[in-house]
Length: 502
Ligand code: NAP
Ligand code: MG
View 1 (cartoon, rainbow, N blue to C red):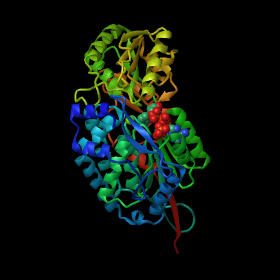
View 2 (cartoon, rainbow, N blue to C red):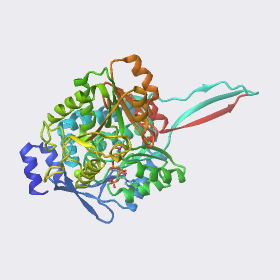
View 3 (spheres, rainbow, N blue to C red):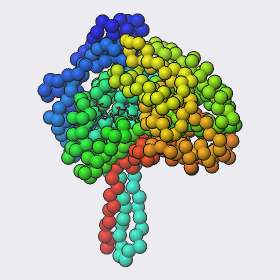
């Protein structure tokens, strides 16, 4: 660990448990064993608030992936896991949720120093969301069933359907909500009786490795959950082609998702893709302007804009545009830009130097395209990968900054005159992950909801997420759903059974 990082941990006083985890050697978790990469390769983990080296993680190889898949297969194809009764799976998932809860402070600190995010937000959102997701899906383990049917066919049959777990599920997740996104995929997969091979993002593998220790402590049989760290271009790509993986569930960017999806379909694997977004926000003329301004800013700047369903395009009725922008700027000014471990941090550093460069190049593109800065726009000098929250005015839909996903704290704003125009502009995007409407005219709001091409519609709020509600995109934001009972259908096969009766 670099002295700079050490100093940072001291300054904010992270827990002994976190220090202990950070300083011990990191291993992959395969078949219940803790392993180095088979070729002993490792990569440095960078702490984003300081830019210093935090620790190292193993870099797995195809050989390691084969081991992980074999472990998951042997548990699925008749191992102890498949013999557990539903209530026994349920109990194990609740035990895991209890352990996550008991270690929540440590997990939030790990997530903060690994990804850069605000430790308070990590605790309240990422870790709490992880606990809730395991608890919600634990309950489903004992509530899965098929149906009994009376066919009209001549003859006498007992016909029924069975819901069966798909098999070995490959889980590939991005770096923005490392533990929580993994939980969205894992909890449901385990609840239905699948086994899993997880590849966290190379930038943010630490909380998943700590989680693996809790999986073991909870008593989940060896080989049910396998964690392999390494590069997406190697391990992720091999997972999408691996004959031992029955289903792939991927969250990440649209370009990578396209490749993963193509590989999976080539092998006729089941696949769920949760991809990018550029979610529109409609602020109608009757909106409560100060409340909407606060919610819009929170909805785009939370996690420093590194949120797939962030409300990044605000379409505001022309009659209130100037006042809305003024309120928005005033509120944004109050958001504290600080290192992730600062308990009052709202705007944390971006995950990496590369992400900081990406975002700042988009800000330059916006200026070249003729957009005007209403607030922010600067990257802060190091150490750390800080970019100011940035608001553009004078934008239009033909600009790249309005069409492309930036994945940083950048909001574009555009006035509109009629709600028909607002809907047309909102839908003019290749993405369809989410949309938001700010208005108290509920009659009008209800007529707009069906017209928006988006997997989630938030009214007078943004990114309200709960395990009971499905999440997933329309259009190039992907297909399939995470969360809610809907997710279960993507993790089970339906078997039709016909029994001829005398
Ligand atoms: P990314 O580059 O697509 O990476 C996502 C994951 O895929 C990482 O684990 C990555 O591994 C892996 N990967 C990279 N190349 C691969 C390949 N050829 N085959 C298989 N896997 C590969 O996305 P990111 O930059 O990490 O995350 C940001 C993106 O995720 C944004 O577009 C965002 O909108 C999207 N996202 C979507 C949702 C949603 O629910 N819709 C939620 C969160 C984020 P390495 O990074 O280790 O190489
Ligand atoms: Mg990191």
